[in-house]
Image (cartoon, rainbow, N blue to C red; front, side, top):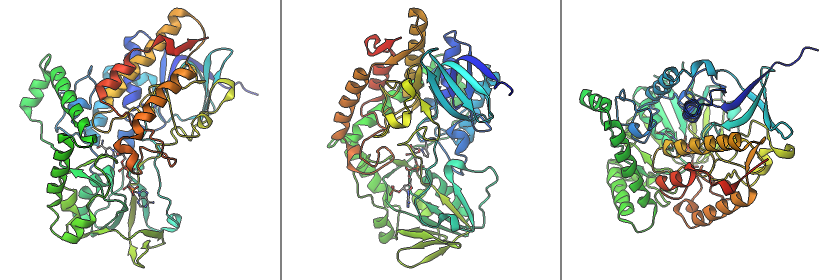
Length: 485
Ligand code: NAP
């Protein structure tokens, strides 16, 4: 029997999206150069590689959707589109010499912690193995495409697509298209598809809050300014502070909230038909689900070829979609803009911690982690953009950068103090989680169903405060919260 090839590293990073790249760059800076980045897709970018649907854009200003240590003078718009972001990521990988350390098309089948050696063993799909002292999961919260639970979906004879797995060759011009979902993704996709569609049916279950996207083109003067020493840092800092003010909009009775509600009402007046306007009026409190930022969603729905279908979907058929009012909607392509499974992260990958304990068992009631980074009984293991780390009002990178600092500080401590492993103490994790869930229980996010919550109602995605508070809490690990062995 031939031996299974095994390669040893200090750190194995799962995912070459924003989190994986940030971790890799900062590890190098910290003098930990012995790492590998494992990426199952064929290219760098994570969610920006997978989400290549027409119209895909970031909905926070691009200067804060770039790392504080790597400003991008090339942005062409305040709200960059997916290909532009992917190019930024590719450039980062190239300029930091990461390409030789990134293994594309490399899927991990199983990961387990070996207590005796204090190392993680990763079994890869191709039959090879990797052993690493530290295992960093940088797969984020939006990586597992969620298909709708609609009977008969497999019977559909046309083309079935999910926005989170968009194929490069999908040209839907001249087709009869159905889009299921009306979240942030659909609001970007619908205006991009509508003009060239023969017919576009948007199946809406819940009408959402829409605010204007304050986009603008970045011209030569902007790009020149972004190259000036100090300007990019100032722009980053100013935008972070301005976006964090938006957090006030999630609290009852604030001026920010009243202003946002008034602006949304005003935007909805773009919808001329009162019946359609009523159908697009949200029935839940602003901010409870992710707010949509769009200037063209309402216009796209009013094109002659567009129709907002509000009758519930009964099932899919060979020809299209049947709704509960007895109508059959014949379609060439059905697009599911139905989001991601955020409540079962890493569900396709068995991760075994101390004593063979499965992460999926530890997370049976919903994912949880100390400050979103460390899980008791899973030593030398760090999550990036893990549970309860997104704010809903600003860039995820503001949470990510200090998480990377936290994880690297833990690695360095283990190296300094000696031992095989470092893990968060269960009591520290429980206390932090209890305080967080208490705070969330009276928040706006407790008022409706969304991808922020499990079916049981636990809010697993959101950090309820300002981004700067989270950064302050996570940046430097509390030595007393961790144990070494
Ligand atoms: P989402 O917010 O989870 O929306 C999914 C949509 O699908 C909802 O409208 C949902 O309706 C509908 N849906 C799900 N199952 C259905 C079913 N069986 N029948 C009918 N409708 C169904 O997903 P998303 O729009 O992909 O956005 C997810 C997150 O990705 C966003 O909130 C955002 O954070 C991120 N995103 C970011 C950007 C960006 O610009 N940075 C762009 C796109 C997405 P219900 O509301 O009734 O459940």
